[in-house]
Length: 459
Image: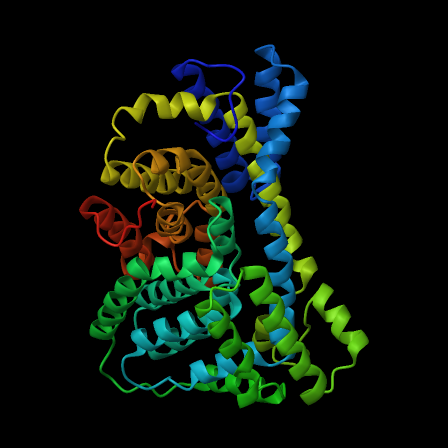
């Protein structure tokens, strides 16, 4: 049974009508009016409350649905606070700047697209944000490709693939933490389990970009050199700043809980900043809340390094609470149950359940254009179905990311699609065929589901 019981049983047509109204509301607000996703979600909540009152559901029950829905995200919310702290501590301690600097060392005249993919993977893993990666180093690579007169579409595809590899696999990523928290799977166990689909997709993509890379010599490295020079000017690039990464790796192998691992590695970075960068302790506390601010004077580098802090996570936390509350109402009003009941007879096998979950994630991304809702609704809707066929929740968490997180940039009217098109000046349709990693991830997760490979069953 679903975690939240329904108070009414709407007809299938009613459920479809309400769902279509929510989709239309989200699409118009995000695409037409360029609204932040919080507002259409809040309007959808009001729409559901109105529907519930019309169906004579007591407001107390609706309120309980809102609260019960939001409870599912409390674990993720606490982790988000520690992510904000970790990012700011790794910035001021030099861990992230050093990782990015080392990534740029791989740039060579040949295999340009493959190198772009590799470096955006490293930067994405380092900062846990796909859009920040695209807006900083991605812009630099697009500038280089334009100056060298090579394909902007393939370059953009490599940038997006690498950025979303990092967004999917980084312990700093909000989507990665959200997916693990929704289905109550340990963060590092979730990341390890994603490796079954992510590693093959990574190597296939790398080979593909290597084959497509131009053979001619590349001369213009001014923008990359400027990035490296700016990172060195920060005074944060040192070998010992990588110690928190080593600690995080050890703690993940030891299966230490995510919050404890994030706290310990943050403390390690703070100690490096305090004893080696001589950052005053009162300034450390302020940075941990408000985030690290870079003032090197090179706009692209400052934009990349200025981030983190507990306060930076409020946007994500607000959206998660609203989206989960909306999900709680959808279950309370029986809308999700009514929709799934129509296809439940088809969800008898492991392959069918995984395929249905994957297409749900893709469908929410395509229809609504919001990756958080794709992760949230897929996770909440399919937990019982996965349990019925004996699958552990970490399989669902993997599907949520493979068909949710990485699909959003492929939708022209999605939040990520619109942002990337505006930043890189390359249309979604143009770069879509070359986002090998993003295209392979949902295919592999469905393929493994149908074959039964790499799946974990309930013991």
